[in-house]
Amino acid sequence: MLQAADIRVTLGGTQVLSDVSVSVGAGEVVAVLGPNGAGKSTLLAVLSGAQRSFSGNVDFAGRPLADWPPHVLARQRAVMAQHSQLGFPFRVLEVVLLGRSPHAGESSRADDLQAAEAALAEAEADHLVDRVYTTLSGGEKQRVHLARVLAQIGYPPPVGTECRSALLLDEPTSSLDPSHQHTTLATARRAAGYGVGVVAVLHDLNLAAMYADRIVMLNAGRLAAAGPPSDVLTEETVATVFGLPVRITRHPTRNCPHVVAL
Image (cartoon, rainbow, N blue to C red; front, side, top):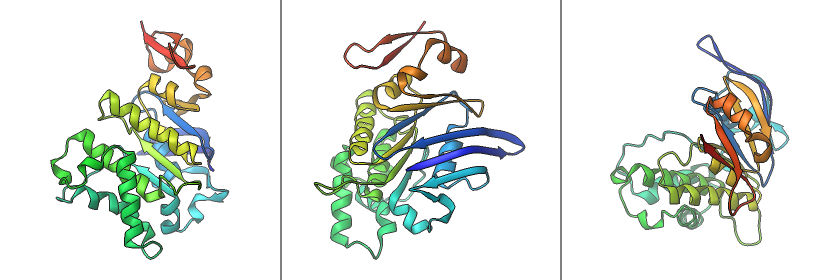
């Protein structure tokens, strides 16, 4: 669905990404991990089309990303940025409906409202629907923006249909309490079940292990490791990339690695 090959990015004379290749298939959750400054957000910007100055190739649905008309791409690819600035006193429903803007002329007001309400319920933010956005907590705002990008790609889709879209999430759990960290990534997993390809930049190794099909680990702009969580989250790799000695055990109830700092 989304493929990037041999990506190099130089910003301000510094090479931020060096020969990085990554892909996400339909129905797959890929977590991007790495220390601060590793190039995670830059990679997501390349995948989304926001970062246009790079060398290498990015394809979406078998077509060069740069060849997609922006309004058509926006209907199939949604991006949840690390920091979303919105200072206007919009109601939450109005914020989520902003995600339906690319569908103007293609969907009715009733369809847009239905998509927004379904997305708010999926993000566990439907109780906020009439609140003023600027009065919300950081975590509540993050859940509203999750609903906005879900509404943008039309997720959840109608019963019996798939949603062949891409969802790019930059640190979607950063402001959330532990319960909503899990519900947010559970949403990513459910979306993958409907055919959505999900890329999520995360800092929590154990959340990545629990919810991702594959992990891409960056270090100093280079690909340090890539593959299933059990292959990437090794004691040696984590110690090398993060400078943190760890013990890798198995999660007590899930068949995935569990990382314990020593």
